[in-house]
Image (cartoon, rainbow, N blue to C red; front, side, top):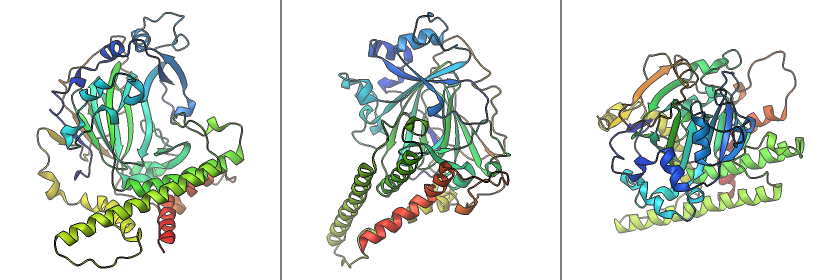
Length: 447
């Protein structure tokens, strides 16, 4: 947890039973279970292909494998999707839902090897995709991420949290815990998003048998570059998540209120498919109150533990600032320390070696789509067995880190005179703004 940058763990999962979880093996385990696949176009558009713009198909893994090898019949669930033009992605499949009645498979994923006792497949999600399947560039509001690559290879494009202004964040489409970028990072429109040229892109190709650690709030775009890919991930909870949940509750309330008022009959135009439905203002108020109460409850427990520790050490306990204030400041300081820690290379360097490879900045140009998912189409279903070494590179697309100001987040376009609801939301629920609002709210309730 001391790592301040993405890193690849090697030789950590060689004894995991889950290392054999190819798509073929999983199709036998799931025995004809219907899974929802997201269908996207293999395009080179500069606009991100958000989940709201995709189609969806319910199919078995056997039907997916047949389609992916171009052997599906015209009557199958994928009949309307030409394999040469579309990709399929079974993403965000939580183990507890996918393996109902087969809880023994949870033990085949052993995150406890990474220092999280008792953590296994129960706290994991499964991802199965075809060539070109990808997740739009986004950051996760909660936790950090461990990703185990089982079959095929995936290319990750990562950007540090301090580059957020250069990623043009948006909450439309809305999904709790995900902040999307307006940019298609593999085919960016620099005229519309000029600040993106200053973003520091880190790229890494994750091969079977490797585990990628993604620190808190690192932006990432992930694409499958082999005909079949299988990944398993787990989001690890962090201390900062308690305040982040208040920020997310504020975001939810504002987005739902404004977008529902704008168009109450078509929520699917702005609500990500991972969200079941838009919620009422009353429900969102309860959600916010629950988040604030949970934050204070955590503060109380944290103080009690701290007091017990001090008393055990024979130290005097002094009365602190109003509950929540100091805890929040500590979380804020911890978050800000990410930037400072990046300059303290000496302490971190000793952590790396042959089995822990840092994803570090370099001067190479970022890989383009050439030679990637869109060009290397193949009908052969390949199961790579982990012989590939991590291909780690990074491209610095600019001179320095940009510390963005809220006022500069709207792109300069003299011809655009109208302000839409989405334009307003991009400012109101900008991560910097919601963080400030959450801190002010907590401070007010602490008095």
